Length: 242
Image (cartoon, rainbow, N blue to C red; front, top):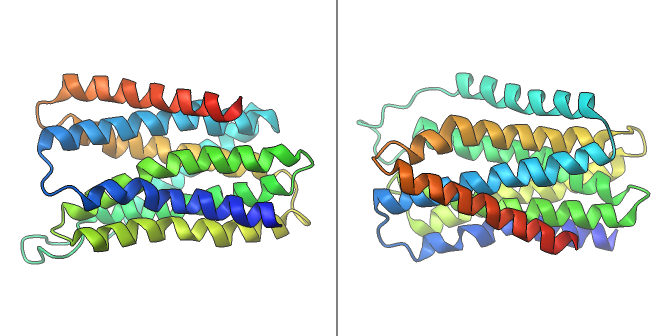
C-alpha cells in the first residue's frame, strides 16, 4: 500500500511538474508555441506506442488492446461533440471550447491512468506497478505543460493556469486507490486502462496538437520538434526500464 500511495502521488504530481515552465513564460511566440506543442505530441505518441501499449500487450492480447484504444478514442470524440460552444468575442476571459476540451480530456483519461497504476500495484509482479507509475508519470509532464499553455492563451493568470494543470492530475491518486481495491472483483483491468489512456492521447495528438503546431507556417521546425520529443521519451523509457 505504501508503494501504491507513493507511486500514484508521484505520477499524479508529474502533471504539475511539467507545467512549471509556464510560470516563467512572459510571452510565447507562435513559433515557440508550435515547437512545444509538436514536442509534446512526440512525447505522447512515444509514451503510447512504446510505453502504455507494450505494457498492455504484456498482460493481454491485441484484441484487448484494440478495444481499449478504440474506447479511449470514442469517448473523447463523443465528449468533444457534447462540449457547448462559447462565444469568445463576448466572453474573452472565459475558457475557449478547445481549451476546455483539452482540460476535460486530460482529466478524463487520467482516470484510467490512475486505475492502471492501482491495478498494476495489485498485480502478482510487484515491479509492474512501479514501471506503470513511472511511465505514466513521464507522459504526465508534457500533459501538464499542454494544459497550462492552452489556459494561458485564454488570458488566464499563469499561476491559475499552473494550478488547474496540476489539479488535472490529482484525480489519478483517487483512481489508483479505487483500482487497487477493484482488483478483488474485476480481473484483467490493467491492459484496458493502459490502452484507453493510449487511445485518448493519440486522439489529442492527431486531432489537436499536430494541426495546432502546423497552423502558423512552422511546419518544418514543428516536425523536427515532434521527432525530438518522440526520441526523448524513448530514451527516458529505456533508462527507467533498464
